[in-house]
Length: 111
Length: 115
Image (tube, rainbow over all chains, first blue to last red; front, side, top):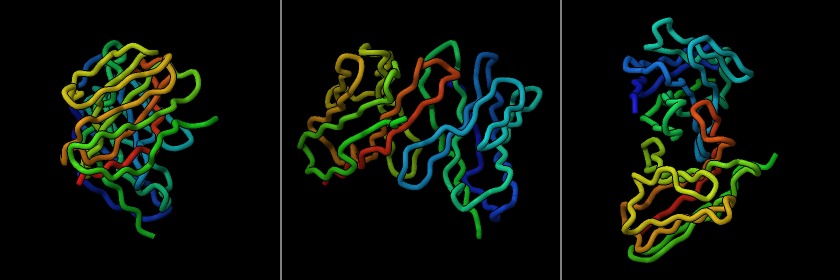
């Protein structure tokens, strides 16, 4: 499975935008870029995914570099509820469908 | 829509005892996953079912762990006998097709403590 690299932790302030980076230099053409987050004492929850183009949904935006070797999850206006561990995961749409989680980025939101 | 249900939420056992966890996926979801999450780490896949067949169990310690998916719906994960290093949160997830673009829905997990 292709690997991703994320900062161990990040900190931001409430109501400010947050940009969470992810490097995936060995990404293949058939890999989707998925983001999940895990709030304290809960199971992971899906945030967003994309293949080549930038994606938006009600939770976040995903900006994918033109060469697809990196991506950024954007929370437009962070709230305290967004404090969680964020995982960037590559998932081959042709092969096995499991999620391979790394360490993720622990996001702290200051009031 | 009801989410993925798991029980029990917490379990404390002595080492060498056995334990079983139950999962009820979202209705209509063909693919079911069991993950193990050790404190401070990301979840790790133990086994994946497509309907009632096993797709991937490469990381399941088969000498002590077993899992089944009855009639392609509910699933049970068993550990027998448990070791101290099995202390973890066991997460069940399901998805509609199990394809690469599919969203996985996770349950709340079962926190296992082995003493």
